[in-house]
Length: 303
Length: 181
Image (cartoon, rainbow over all chains, first blue to last red; front, side, top):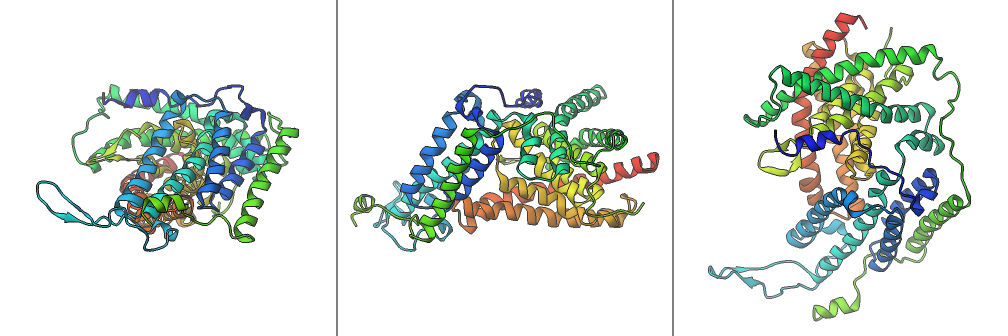
């Protein structure tokens, strides 16, 4: 068996959520979504490291209020680390891309004289500037803050309340019900997938064979995907009939879980509004929060 | 019975949920397949699910299958919530759904070609939306967006989708014929 496949498959039906009694869990899931989205829109208004540091602190206070452990969340952080590496090291620092038009052209070069490659003695000029390095720090703060806010959601939000939460946020009843149904289908389909995999293996199917090109590998996956998909479509017909017989959709739906706002939820929503509206006012009325490089940083460049 | 493109009745509610759950489960189950000589790019044959559900059940079902399926898959894997990539995956299902009303047998040459063409457009547009949003969120420039986000997402999605979609369409045609649905 190819390493990595079985452990991944075994945890298919394992949701990341468990009750941790963290401060974050005291808030209504609707208030938490409002906060997360307001935070996202507010933080993306700024490229000034002072503002970004403020958001970064808020994000990690929020993150640590979940009581999630590093061991639990490290997988997600590895992915974010990879994205940050691509964005910051490869683009901003090594290739010196345009940084989205945020960093003004020109600036103070880190190696104005260029450098020499030892042994071969070739000269090279590296266009990295101190401004661009500062921009990399800003990117780190901004992406880190957004990641902390959104990475923690699956670990702290009960999958059973997604449907009612999004209904409460104004999503149409049918869409919210679809969401609820999808969450409940996941363990069933994961079990079907496992059964199909075992059945195909019993017939000599070798999913782990890595011989052949990529097209062969994709075609080899078809004996798994096709039966699981077709079986679920046939099951869907029965579920549709059962729902129709129970008059689904003739009147607004009631939900098993009931969500109620408390004072702390109103406080969080008020804070979210202040964050977003305050950010908009800062940027558009006072013109604060655009990309800025501190004096001490430029002194390092000798400028 | 005449097909309606934007209908969202009981049948669509159920198939949107099944599509989303299926996309999530198959994404996780096939995440271990890697592109040869590009170890960091995960190959996702399950991308065919939103395309297929779009082609068969319409744009809303296709959209929910992609959008919600990606959310669930990320939630289970512990990757968090990345709205713009979820939206991009939704568009991958929505665009092929636009031709659902014109589908007749699902296994005819014409149906398969239209399915492939609209799925390709869906991938190009959907991943375009997701990648460009990185400019807003991460401050990346266009070249980074194209080479670090867009192409690594588009190429495997197209290869997987274009190979697996006809297989699923032909299998579905057999089911339709057998069950008279």
